[in-house]
Length: 379
Image 1 (cartoon, rainbow, N blue to C red):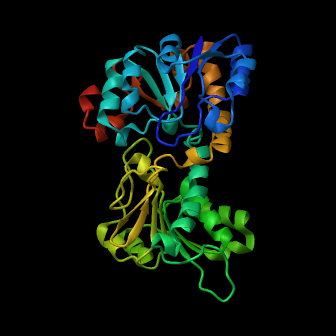
Image 2 (cartoon, helix red, strand yellow; image 1 turned 60 degrees about the vertical axis):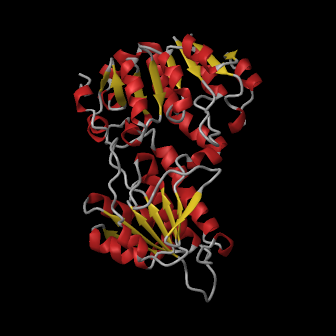
């Protein structure tokens, strides 16, 4: 089978879908790998490394797309790449997609061209976890606190508060909405710095899990962290005192619910920083809209919003290594056994299938895009 990988063109996206060691494993298994020149430069992988690992290099993205059976990427195709999808009829795309909150035209193109689009973020494991989303969620959780620390500075019109532990000074208050991988990582990072942290999490077994997790991870620093059942009242109370508000709500494959209202944001202190990591799925905080690394923040009501849709793109070396460690085994399985057979033999992997054979195969995507007539489950 022929595997293709092209250079990411989303603003300031430096990750790459396949690294040289992955090429080597695919080539050793008898598969051909075609890499666009320069695809790995941003992550520190040069063309010669790919060539030595057994890849064929192509100058243009279209050449890669026309040759390959499976295209592996990092981020969803953006409008400038839509024409490539028209040259990719009936083939397989393996990448992050976030279709429920994406431009509707992307889904239309995938359906029209009968592309089997497998979204990293909806592939599940046996326990219902999201193994291909987890590594980037960990990175985004750490970066959400790093960005917050930067924009809290006075020169950015922030509160003038440090997230570090300073003797005889009041610690910063960090509120995290959602206790999944992003939220727990952000909370752990902030608590480790010495912040007072509150996680707002829906009632259920996750709360007990988080309590045990933080006791193990933070030890005595766990005293800096409080876990509260999430509801309208608790969110409203928590946001009033927040120096930093992190949005980390996830509903698998679906558009994120807006849990933080305009009134809640307005009640926050001037100069507070809002980091909505849920922006890939539409955002969970009122006022959130996608931003880029080139223009990362904007003000609303004297609050500073940071809603970068590809945070891990700025730490591409580690991000790419972590991502490809998770995706390569599944890519190898598809290449060895065929895409459809692999999907049919692994129901958890098949949950990653968002479009197939001219239909939308993920119900939440069809619902949130109001494209229910195109929905057909993969059976």
